[in-house]
Image (cartoon, rainbow, N blue to C red; front, side, top):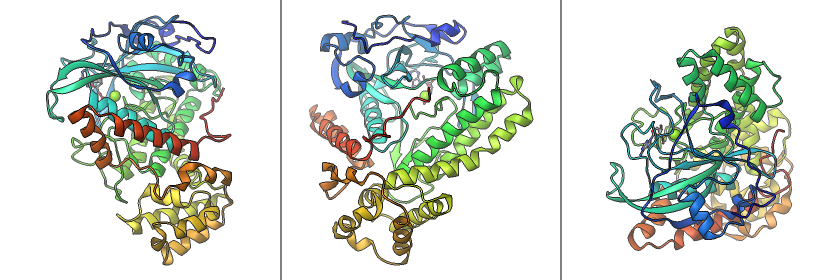
Length: 478
Ligand code: AMP
Ligand code: MG
C-alpha cells in the first residue's frame, strides 16, 4: 500500500503483551466483494487512497497494514444478562490495527466475521451479510445524530452460506471492519480480576489512563473510574436522546471510552415506549429502552468491583454514586444538542428535557423522536417551518405550549445550520425496522443495493445538517 503521511500506525495494545490477546489468522474466504467503503472515515486515518484491490486485501483478506503486528483476538470476560461468563473473548473478530486519527485520537480497526479464534466456543466465527448491513446502518445513523459511536469502515461480502437461528438460512456472509476509539471493555478488567492478577489490572489501568483518559493522574484508580463513568453516562444519555435501543448491554459490549459499538439486535423506538426491548432473546426486558442508563450503571458497578484490588472500596463506591448526577446532566446536554439550542442554566434545561419527553409521550405513534427534533431544531428559528410543516397540527395543546415556552427560553445554537438541504425535506431520516427490513429485502432478493446506498447518502446529508459544524467532531481529550 502506498503509505500516506496521514496513515499513522500506533499498535499500542500489543505493548500489553500476550496475556491480553492471542495472535490469530483470518479465515480464507471463497470471495471478497466490496459492499461498503467509508472513504470519509478512511480519510481520517490516511486510508482513503487505497485502490480497490488494496482495500480488499486489507479489509477482506485481512492482510496486515504496514507497521501493524498482525491480528490479535482480544481476551475478555463479561456478564451476559447478569450472568458471569469466563469463556468470552473475540470469537469472530480481532484487533486488526491501531492508528492515530487526524484529531489525535487512537483508533482501533476491529473486525467482525473474520473467522474462528480460540474464543469461538464452537461457533463459526462468521458474520451474516444482514448483520453487517445492520451494523453499517446503525453506526451511520448514530453518527448523524451525534452519538459517540464506532464507525463502519468496510463491509465485504465473503461468499459463504451460513446457518443461523434468527435469519432464514442459509444466509450470506460478510466481514465488517469498524473504527472504534478502543475495544477495551469493562469485561477486559473483569477477566484480570477473575484471574486474580493484580499486575494485569495495574497494567490495564495505566494503559487505559495514558491512552484514553490522560487527564487522570497516574495511579488515581477512582479517578479513572470517574472518567469512564462520565463517558458511559454521556453515552447512555445520547442513546436516550436518539431514541436508540442498543439491545445487548453486557459488560463485554461497553468500552472504556464510552463509544458505542457492536450493533446486533438494535432498534430505534417506533414510538414513546419506555419498555421497548430490541433483542428477541431479552425476555425480561433487561436492556429495554428506558433501562439503558440503569444497565450501564450496573455494568459500571462490575467494573468498580474488578478494580477493588487497586483502590479503597469507599472511594470506588463514592465514584459510582456520581453516575446519577452525571447521567442527568448528560441527558440535558444531549437533548439540548438534539434541539440545537444553547444552555439556559440547569433548571431551564431540565424543564426543556421534561417538556420534550412529555410531548413525545403524548405524541405516541404520531410524533416520534426524529420528527420532533427535526421540526424544532434551533428552537424558535424553526417555528415557522415546524408549524407550517406536515406535523403542524400536532403542535397545539397544553403539553405543546409548555414545550414551546421552555424551548423559546433557549437561544438557538448556530441556526445557520437550518440552511442545510436536509431541512428542506418534509420528513427527517429515521431508521425504523420496516425500512431496515426493506433495505435488506432488496439486497436479499435481487442483490439490489440501491436502497442501501440511497439511505447512506441521505444520512450523510442529515449528518451534515445536524453535526458538521465547528464543535461537531468528537474531539480528542488530548
Ligand atoms: P456479541 O453478542 O456479538 O457481543 O457476542 C458475544 C460473544 O459471542 C463474543 O465473545 C463473540 O465473539 C461471540 N460470538 C458471537 N457470534 C459468534 C460466532 N458466529 N462465532 C464465534 N463467536 C461468536
Ligand atoms: Mg460483543
